[in-house]
Image 1 (cartoon, rainbow, N blue to C red):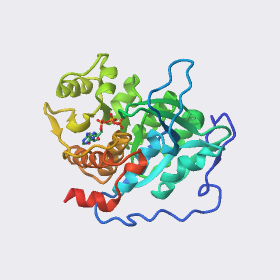
Image 2: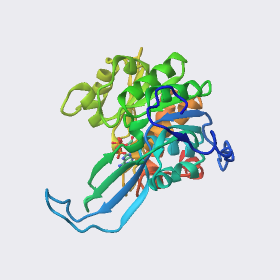
Image 3: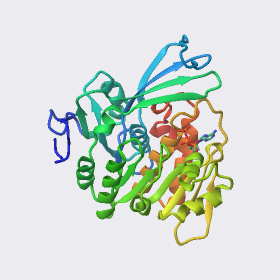
Length: 336
Ligand code: ATP
């Protein structure tokens, strides 16, 4: 354990204290695109997905289709997306010492994400149990497992080790105090902080003030604004900006995204290409990961939202979360 407030014994994955892992090759296989450093402080899950004709009623058992087991978790998804866009990515988080850990880390390893800040905690890896009906609608139960063991001091210490100029991105699948500590540490170091307020939850004034940008979808925006739903996206972006973030991005599915920054009246809209949608799972994470990679490379917010929108639109054309993400060549092709 490296941080003083780690309650349970943890070990780190090979690379920190264990045998050396070959360093990810910056730019390996990349044809063009942003290069920058991204540190993701977030969740790592195994997703267990079953198709059903109808979801079970209370007390009922239903027969499902084949079980699909794959990597997930918003932190891991965003880390993979940032890596395929070309960033050098470090993930800060934890997996358990169970068999799900390997599955949960599979996509990260394949994408060359640095896992030296991922701890192994005794117990279960975070796991999402997903039931999908023929209309594509899903019902999800998430068991946080090891994600819930990431202590505030542990995350803050990792952020302290982040390279200068890194973009630090967080979602809300780690304990709230951990998110808060990591954001404060990043802000104290002057690092750019991106917060994806998903799953939706209130944010402290300190976290809100550090966001550059705060990224939410429509329903998350509504929760932060205390509304049932958002009507006009531009009005929602302005109202979110009034809560204190330096900039905001509201994603709008097929409509793309709007973005706005402090000091400007303008809310700008970026529209994705029209595509045939297969499965939108993980599209939001593809968007956020790509956005962070672009910002880390020095793109301005508008250009970064442009690239993120493109990557999101590519991700909806294949099933699954990480399995739906494009590779560097596809991204380069789409940008032409
Ligand atoms: P999810 O929960 O499905 O991962 P989300 O609700 O967090 O997604 P969305 O706003 O639905 O986020 O989508 C994020 C981005 O993905 C959009 O800004 C867009 O770039 C892309 N996207 C999503 N749906 C579509 C679509 N139907 N056509 C084209 N692009 C899409």
